[in-house]
Amino acid sequence: MFKGGMAMNGMQGMLKKVQKMQSEMTRLQDELKEREVEGTAGGEAVKAVVNGNKNLVSLTLSPDAVDPEDVEMLQDLIVTAVNDAMKKVDEMTEKELGKVTGGLKLPGMF
Image 1 (cartoon, rainbow, N blue to C red):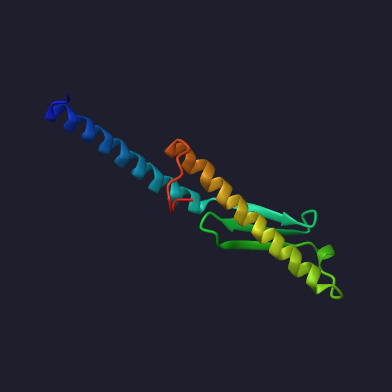
Image 2: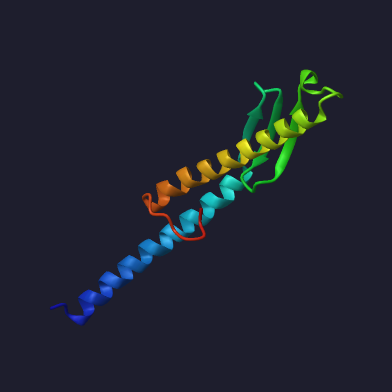
């Protein structure tokens, strides 16, 4: 049996660890928002740069990708490049936050 004081000390220690993890996760989430990742499509004919907040920062089109006769292809390349960048943001976030949580996936965090 645990004495009241021992159980309380253990609980306090666990709470301190949780608070430290929360603080580290908040700091890391703020840092990740500032990072940028690049998604590409069409052999890098289209490049989309997205920040960790999932905002499109820039879009670069190669002149070769712009064909007035095939606007649909360009639209598809843009969508593909942006989606590629968004996927990379998710992967980056999961990887970095996983370092803090020890791989434990917390609901609403990823």
